[in-house]
Image (cartoon, rainbow, N blue to C red; front, side, top):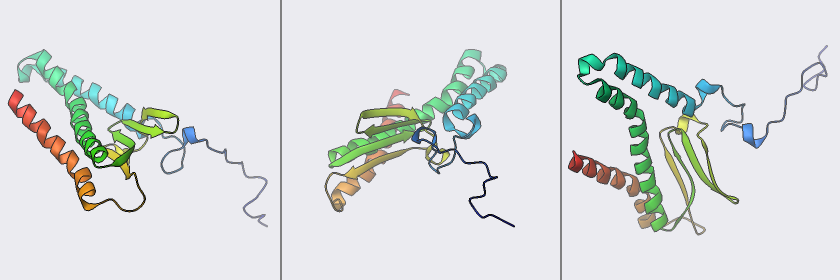
Length: 165
């Protein structure tokens, strides 16, 4: 005979705090389930690959440096893109809430700024969260400015990169 969902023989689930919650409400993922440690491991592996193939690439130090710099430079390019959205959104009258780039998350809370590790693989590429300062929908011009800021920043970065090359 079943006693139902409040069966006294079942172990009680621990109440989770906001500090150990994930975006889906579960427990904290093991290190391989969080972006920051996995990306750090990928940097180390890419350095090892550069060191292993250094003879076929010509210069050992350059090959290792290039392989190790690949992932951090990708994160930097994503950061420029997302900061373009933030800059154009702030100029168009939006209010900043959060920015996630790769393994990093920055948010504005009532107590100030909060910098933490990004807990979600679904947001590892990047996201800028801005909301209109006033009630209602923003104007089309303001929305277009917010959306165009990221690609414009990316284009400007590529122009700078090609100019310096």
